[in-house]
Image 1 (cartoon, rainbow, N blue to C red):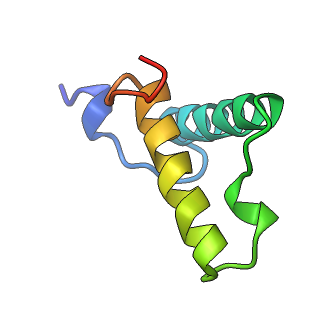
Image 2: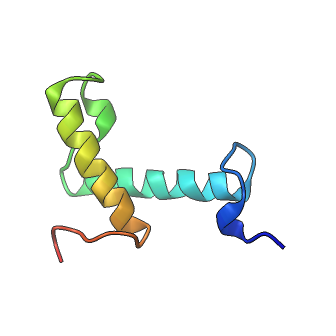
Length: 71
């Protein structure tokens, strides 16, 4: 049987729902910490690129797959 890690990440699947929940959690945590989220800046601007990088680092940390600056 195929493990959950190999299930497709498409709308309506449990993996998709988990990914959205993780993303929303990271957004809420960043907002509570006074950090910006990607939608706070126009896409493609230097500010957006900086925030998207920081957001992805936080997303990796929240998923247990990366180190965080606070550690």
